[in-house]
Figure 1: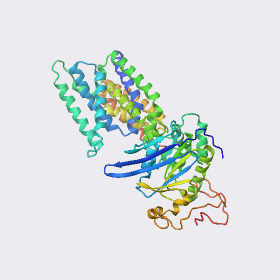
Figure 2: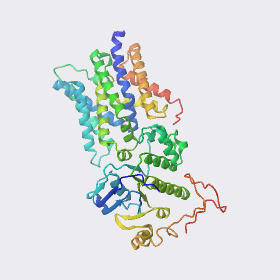
Figure 3: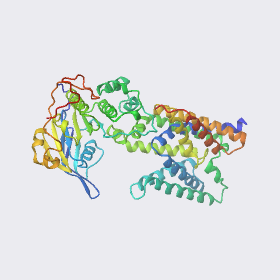
Figure 4: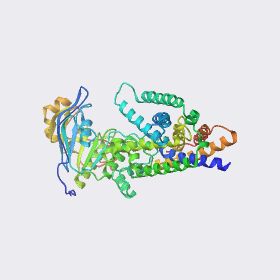
Length: 261
Length: 264
């Protein structure tokens, strides 16, 4: 049992750890739908990786950044509002991704695994790659923490105070793309947003500072991954959705506490 | 009055700046010079382009025509008109100030003391009243030890006594640090007397100069009406028979009048 569960648990924990602070930014900056769109686009990246036989993580990161860039460009026009635009791009890229994956004739691809994750299939190599990615993201986050927080509170004030606003925004996009690339194999593209948003939302009610919220979101995410895996093991439920349900249940418990700040 | 700055050149110079949003011209051939140790007030009706001009000065926008020169290495403290922190973000006042001044707690506590809101340091930013938030924003701007302080409608939502205290504090800061100050206001009353230079803006500069000169200028009266948009407009001079702390409470009440400010 432990040989089978250990890589899955370690991989899930790496994603959950990073999803805490990243999810906090997604919540603070109201980027949930944006993150969802990037995740949907990630499927297109994965399909291209299969078709062109290139590294999956690299292809997903590139696809996410391309979509983020395209969205920034499309938002210059004013007739279609941001959320509508996200809806168009999210579902178009998802549809294209599903078509592209179903067209792969050379390899048998489990579409379900990409959509909802297949944590039990990760190898030790994947675990290593995920933890390496997690460390990179956490270091970059810590390094740019004050700038990231500054532009989140008020971009004008941040710019006047000398924070490179555009560069900091790009760093946040890049980190989000990296996280999604890692999470695609664990919870799948359809459930990534939930792992970002639910633990952070739960942590909000228990925190007085941004740092507390980020750390608590990580803890809630770690607990959700552990509980979800256990549920999957004992009740034979799909892993990704089990983790999301566990996160939602934990969030439900935080509602019992009165917010104090 | 001590001038601590060694560098005394012009802080920001706007030369013939023009800016339009689509077909709508917001600023047309506007020039403005900000000097160290001088308080400049930008007045004009709503929608006259005051905030846009401030954004040019702050480097947050670029003019379509003309140019904006800023002294190299200029440190700017900015107090925006509104600042709304999203409710999803838990943030104490101290943490908010830390974003501008990550050093020791001491400096942040002193800055809050200065603006009269030291007791708010551990409070959540979200629960602050409008007036409290403005004190906190001013503390954040001061923490940067600015060469130039830009305040957008600082007196909004503050009562007359509180405004008086605020302008008094700004005068003190100017005297102590020698910084230049740019104030934006559509409320002319108290502002005028505390100001070295008034610029009257309505997409273009209608008139500018000392408060006395501007208040006699026909262009000023065309813009604000014969009484300057206010009953009894005269340059306000404050007689110091009592003073106020920043929350606007009189410390002592001379002739038994509360809030009985004489504006004539």
